[in-house]
Image (cartoon, rainbow, N blue to C red; front, side, top):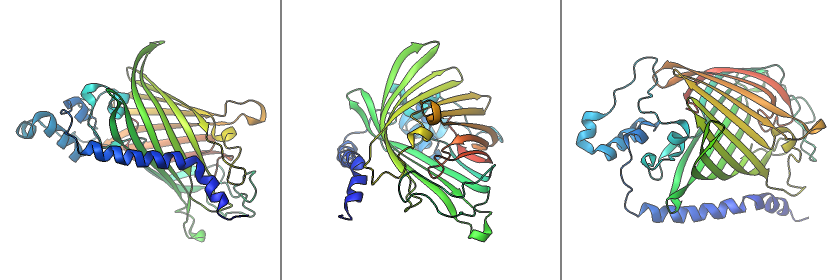
Amino acid sequence: MNPCTPARTASRALLVAVRLGAALGLAATRLASQDPAEPASPEACAAIESDPQRLACYDRAFGRDRAKEGVPPEPGPGEPDRAGTAPLLDSRWELEPASKLGTFNLRAYQPVYVLPWVGALEANQSPSSPAPGRTVAGSEQLERSEVKFQISFKSKVWQGVFGDTGDLWIAYTQSSRWQLYNAEQSRPFRETNYEPEVLLAFATGYRLAGWDGRLLTVGLNHQSNGRDEPLSRGWTRVIAGLGLEREGWTLTLRPWWRVPESEAADDNPDIEDYLGRADLLLVRHVRHHEVAALVRHSLRGGDRSHGAVQLDWAFPVRGNLRGHVQLFHGYGESLIDYNFRTTRLGLGLALIEWY
């Protein structure tokens, strides 16, 4: 057998993403050479997480001299800056014309946090998969307590793909689980998941049972742990997203379709029966506190019925720093644990939440 064949087969699903990335690079170069867009509104500027980028936005919106006199004051101790905050979906995806900030601004995507302590009822000592050669023979000798942290960001690379509608974004999320308290095993990084995405986002305007339909996305998502057999795990999905909101609430529904892989290249052929075929995120924001519930399910019955629930609570500590509590129960807390059921509680701090 040609040793290059599995590699070519595994990369086939990502070939579209590579070609699209090249096209995006060409489009980005052309867009960068064009005249800048009209200045953004002050409301759009207030939604930017980065202080230098927010100040630059105010400079564009007001003019340099006026910006020096009108920059909003710094928040007081224990009070996150929420002055001029737009609704979540608008502030994160620039849906309204007045919220448009142009391209190549670094924006928040998923929460950014560090949990110095995460405790599990049980550790996955022998990760397994029905794919040949993907099951660990012995015990990994893992501790039930570890550290978890996540970074996540996105950037718009093309504003107005179809005239006045449709924005193209690229995004990246990375989450790591570090066995810091496992001195006997030299404190290894147990699992890191890498998740690049390309998304096309559209503003919508409809009412559904008292909710405002604000966002439609379609994207290509690849998630993997970058490890060799028997610990290699990964998959590629085409994901659709619907975003709705009402006062203080945001609801996002994401069904997806897994891009097929060859039998030889598939590390986890039953991953959809555990990590699911759709998820639902409900976020409640009130008085500087945020509670988020993420639910996933396989959408199948019988012995293929699996899912997970994750609850996150964020509360103010000082400035934009927030405390973060995370509770997870079910399957797929990470890719290596996609078919392992666990309950985990994490405590830590966050710089960026959903809101």
